Image (cartoon, rainbow, N blue to C red):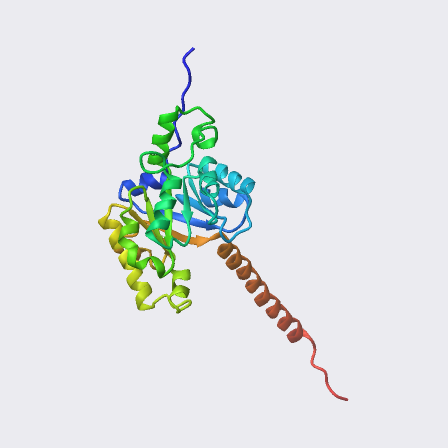
Length: 279
């Protein structure tokens, strides 16, 4: 009987980016597989779930990855800045990519690449016995090759410290995507929330230009209002929206309508009462 071998699930995000298209992500704060599946069913290319700011545990993340995969949607996990296991666990659970926050120098970036890419790009620890390796169903060397081709790292620039080494960072072999985080960056330059600050605007543009120059992908946070502008700069991966924002707006919209209705009903009740006449 012929032995069955498996291939790693191709990344939807990489497929679109390598074809010159734009890939769209939805940020998830809610630790629920159903929230991931709703986003996947909506047509996003990937969801990204968070372990930097959100109290998710590995079991929650694993279920979100499975829910997204069921609809051929990638999952990105923003990792906590910890040991190398924090970087490789999401990949072994078959996340398509990891996002590493607050890259502070070229040396920092090199270490991330070393931990997240297999030979010859890095020395990521090997264990093909998990979901990404089809539980030992992919031969050893094929597993390494497919992981380097179909799984990706995203390094975040959100501080002033790495700016002098920005080109060295983006040019690194094995770096797949550079991601500009404007919120933390605005705080880093002493202008919290000033998204039109000249240095922020300049850095956002420079990152996209350098990514194009060195054949890398650039990503950032955007909106439906500025997506065209960001794509024109050279950004091809856009995170637009978040589950908590959607729910907040939806709930507030309902309550706003109900309060208007209540106010109208109360006014109607009082207007229908007979006018009292003093004796």
